[in-house]
Image (cartoon, rainbow, N blue to C red; front, side, top):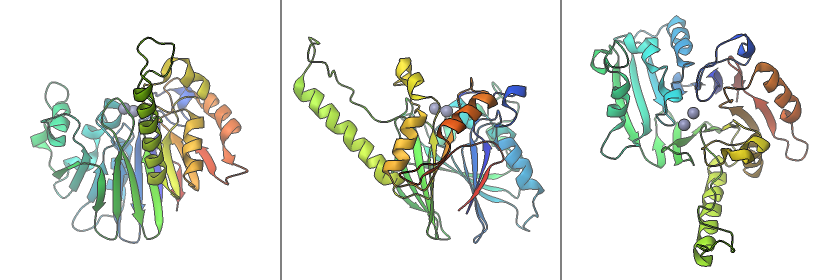
Length: 305
Ligand SMILES: [Zn+2]
Ligand SMILES: [Zn+2]
């Protein structure tokens, strides 16, 4: 299994000389399963454009490309590259597109079609040459064939957002691109006139259970790819509830789940290469107590598992 990063940025592409080493493309990760010749792609941020070109330049199979594209959610930074994904314009491409159905009464196909309309892009959904099948995902475990087991769980984000786990031949990779730890949503200060002790305790219990469920989802993964948009200091100064984690929270999630490697992604658009180098010096490398290997992902990074 090889995991290759084609886009690591969150929120908006950030091209420019200050981001040229880590890359300015928004999220797109390729998971190559060499033994069975399958390619899984997580998210269609702007990084998917170069992945598409690369896929088309590889030695071709006689019957074209068969690809599985899993969308974490349909926020723009995770789908904006899709109309520029070259294999979509080839008749011999078979693409299965999975994702959570986030709007009631609207399928994934309809949500994606919203982007592929003349209002936003000159090519419409019905004009794509590839054979595209849409699969609306809910939480659960799915058999993708060839021994590939896909697990999906809901993360903590303002829009329904999926975390994925792929298990294949004894190797595992988990993704949690846009998420933050679950927290108590009820009033917890007894001095507040609206404080309700029962509600506060229930809220605490629900948050703890949800975080425990996340740890069991990431359990002993060979690689966890996790949102690390902020530092703890940034998170605490008004960014809690925005649906993104701090680096420290991501490390805590990986360590408490017994993961072997952690690749941080969804880098804040404000982060320059120099900032990411500083963070790497501060948090990167092997952690003494847990043995967890931490890195800040950059475009072109490939991790063999
Ligand atoms: Zn995002
Ligand atoms: Zn998002």
